[in-house]
Length: 376
Ligand SMILES: [Zn+2]
Image (cartoon, rainbow, N blue to C red):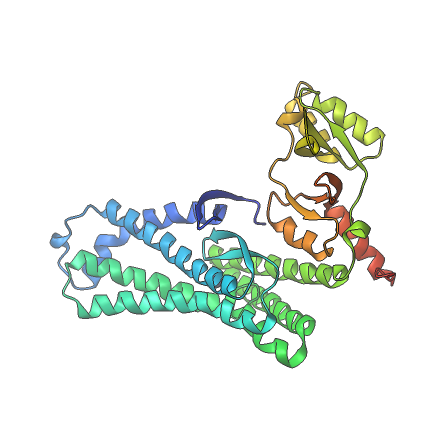
């Protein structure tokens, strides 16, 4: 669900991605603010004639303020996560908050605090804006804008504190439960509470014709389910060697080859994918330029025609892990890069294997059969 986003910029090397929900929501806020701003100033009992900046400019300013508020909220999470030893791989900003993708896990006891600082930041911005509105003698339009910013951040803070996992409140709940009932039980409780709240949002949203609430319900439900399966996978993969997880059914391809030929070769040979290798020899052997996955390549050919050269269809933004790593690091690496596959590198630096969803599902299924995945 985080695939529908674009990397907008980098902040201290952390890619900041904008989710499609935010890309739609920001213009919507600008539009509503433009149309309502004068009426809002009037409702506050302030003279509308004193508005000197055109309403659409206030619309833009308030949209940017909302964006900045969400960014600060998410940065607070990231900075605390970093201080507690997790590596922040990317930040995705969404309409009503955001998600920080972490590599490695924050100590469960610290998760509550990490989750709480986001809403705390939003409430802090709300209090500061409201304080400035109430105490300073400002032009009416500036005062009105500050009040709007205070409202937006109050809503962000309170909404995210609802104990509906994966929202911050749900993470606070899980963090507080961990020391009492253990991690997996805490997750189960928090995700079940999240799903129940999603159901309540959905029913209330439908009854009150509130489309936004129904969308939020869907988001919470999907997020809770995703977290349940992610943790289930983590439990299965912990202590399993990468060599037992990865597939070595990997072929080779070269730039200039037709994608259709490569796809056919891979599928006939029952290979999962192929590294696309540079022709030039480097001291470490041929340099991998990217990767193609057999099934995906076949789809691309069907969509884009048989003339497609293989290098136009390859994935280049791939995360990698070492063959000696624990299998859980492949799960972490999957959320960085483009999320479809993780390269497994050998001690010499060459690609020795590949992990996709299928490899993880295979071990999950084996574990479900009661197979011991830790023979050593
Ligand atoms: Zn948050």
